[in-house]
Image (cartoon, rainbow, N blue to C red; front, side):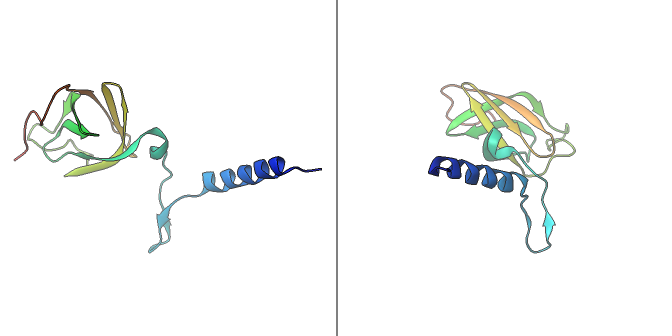
Length: 122
């Protein structure tokens, strides 16, 4: 005899299978998007890249990149979007890690007490 509990488990498992295999896409073109795991690894985040990747403001806290990234002329490196790169950011204590679907990863460290960016982009 099946109980409500067992029926609920079966329904949840079926739903998980359906949702896990579904891909979002562009309804206008019918083109499926690449599968992503961003939501599972962090909060959606648009990283400002216009003058290179140097700092980030996350949840009201200022972070500085462990290693600044730019093309040497005040632009983002090749392969990065400009002025923003969409992705996800995960904050764990004083560390924030940005990741995107293109495979970029940037690690930032908090600047306790900071009230603004170290530099401003013109």
